[in-house]
Length: 524
Image 1 (cartoon, rainbow, N blue to C red):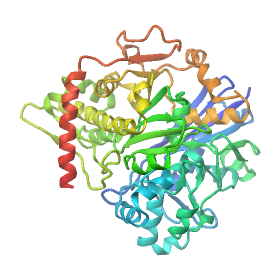
Image 2 (cartoon, helix red, strand yellow):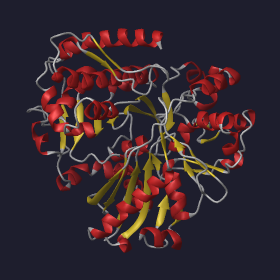
Image 3 (cartoon, rainbow, N blue to C red):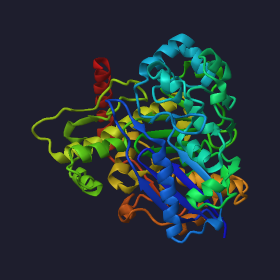
């Protein structure tokens, strides 16, 4: 039996799983960690945390009975944008500045003024947002020149793992798209912009398509991890691109909604925007290369989605379990009796691009109980994703024709939050019976490199067989759609959720949310 291994190097944990030649998940494991917040708006991690978590996960797989001799390929996905700045020996010169760190807003704005907003978007198909890697590099040059002088290599988190495994310096097109210095249209580094900004091109590694084999596990890495020497390692993908692959979002008929630490709405594109369209698009829209060759996607991102619920639990919920918080939220009526939550705990990306915005509860009165606050957090995150959907729609009018938005992330464990999402977005949603997202997508790409299937569509089409063999959702998922499962759906293991009468309440709630957000933006 041959297996492919996939890893997701996340912000708050690393997930590793193994799939067989039919795409069935054989084993999975997870190692959690946290990130540091040295100042308001900052977020950092030591890259060694990811390597140690990855090794810990592998050790757990071996303890579960998986033999490394059966693993023929490894694929990694990971958090986008987070800077991994390394010296000539491959050691980090500082902590990684994460994707949700907004300290670089001023230097990003200055760079856009220097290059020209429309010209920059023409060159990269994106604006320069504070979370992007380029801003971090320029910030370090200004604020930590002694650190900047030591830099010799720039990687993304999953590329750091790949380097430790293979000794090679590499990137893939989907992760490179989020650096802010990549030609998304041509799928290559934007070398003219590097020259203009006086950045050494030698720091930026060769770029591959996500499923390409970039090397193999070295003897030293084998000793450190237990993986077999010579095991193939692919370039891998950005977490959202990999999650899209894992959820079957590989054509324009499907979209993805992901709620992890952040929240994402993603829609596939058959071509990158033209220079004119890129120049004039909403500057908070993300247009990146997909993990599938000759495919792209448009995406909107809200920074504190699952992070909002975690913050509420830890700061105001006395450490209550997520299940108990959901039970409490269910006691509140849709609309939370007029209470609105703005999820700007670390500023906001789409559509406001502000490092100064901060979160708030608006409309508190004497009638509000704890249940209203919990539910308003769920609703506020859904409203922020509605903002993202509208921005994605501004570029890709075909979003209206998307047959299904597949949902992934921790939200799939909450029928209540899923229903709120469906109602706020006024869209039917699909929830697969597996929700491994990025780790599964990375494993699928690794399997593709070994001929497990000839095209990723072959795996997607076989989901009807796969789903029957996958572990189900949480026990309460049988009530997910409350008899709203689509009987015509050919894929077993897929729950369909449709908007409820709560849509009308949320249309008004969204209008109020937008008005309050604009007010906060003016005050920031």
